[in-house]
Length: 125
Length: 453
Image (cartoon, rainbow over all chains, first blue to last red; front, side):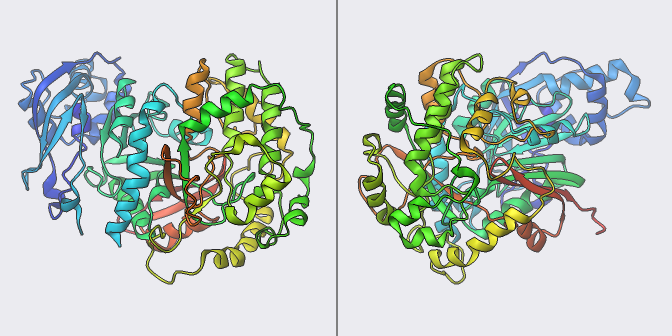
């Protein structure tokens, strides 16, 4: 699971609503996956990133060199874009958990795949 | 009601995909061109989700966008992951995304697996929720109106039976099965079976047919198999591919009640290799396999009779926004020629019947080189194939029909206009941009309205 994916994920435990974001990340196995750098692609992602969530996740993973936010003229700042590229796309959580900040419910990540299914009881309306 | 719906889906959607997932590995059916086009038209840097991604065939279509694959079925997701895709396991009814985070979503052959109207609406609303205003959603669902077969009912169980494949493979390879394939009945109503069996069902269907008729079943298949085999060598994978096509043709849906027609069929054209097959359509009767929609349960056949004619007439007259596959009325072998040519990796657009949109009759599956893999793949057909598997009649309760090795998938096949109506009536946050038919599927592209609307 990449951090860009994590940035989109929210808990859908019943009653939690927007307080289900962001999910608290814990990782027991992380891999760095080289991904071809596409500056235009990364630049377009920047406005869509929820920064607080990204920083929180990056912090949990003890990542370094993570920009704290978009900087002036970021679209043409290769260093910035490369750092963002790395954080968003190259860090891959293979094993770990995602926790709903409101309910505490844990969603597992196994073999790089988050499992966001709720049980029957949890989804009963 | 919702619980029963979930149970039905568990048994006849989730468990089936989970069990048959191993047979999907390596066997990717080709991406529908119109879907590919939709994905390629998205702006670079878009965040896109494929809800119901299966093994991930659409996840790498556009390298300029970030595409997340989501599926309820863990094994399928694992396969997609092994291909290097970013994926997760989740439920369409409870998407684990924050509101308005995604630029586009595709839902290809998914909504038709929900067994109640309410659940179908919920699934669509969930996808709308996670779209940004202005974001687009593309939905494909299996159409009730098919060009070579007819679903008599909208709620059906479709079997997937491994055993059939071995059988077909053996049979098709026999040289004796030559039948003349240059039949022209596709271009005009096909009446003989009606007079032969003179059963009420045939007349119900009005034999407007250009639709194939259950009674066509055997001769149709035979002709198609013949045509397919004769096309061997068209593509790189040659015979295997061709054989694959012919297998698919065997999986015709027999939409008419087996008890009425099987005798006729066996009398008219006894084919030994049909023994032990699952036959005819499973139409889900009010209980226990009802469509589970609340509201008056009309007798299915009555409903059919009333609406069929209208739907069919509408189809032949209506001009859909998207160009059709080359005529719903089509010479059968002509279809097959088109289909067969289109097979093979990336050879889609080189086929005989490429319209501008690349919408071709029939199916677009790739063919892996080994025949044994073909067997598995053909049997595990994508629901968006134009020649879907046979469907089974559950109401007949015939033990030999329900092969214990047959996995049956539940589908609610959509009538023309039904999907559109669903969005229009129940999903106010979406505005329909276009709708049409593609390869036997009803398709819609809708846009998330701005908040101020």
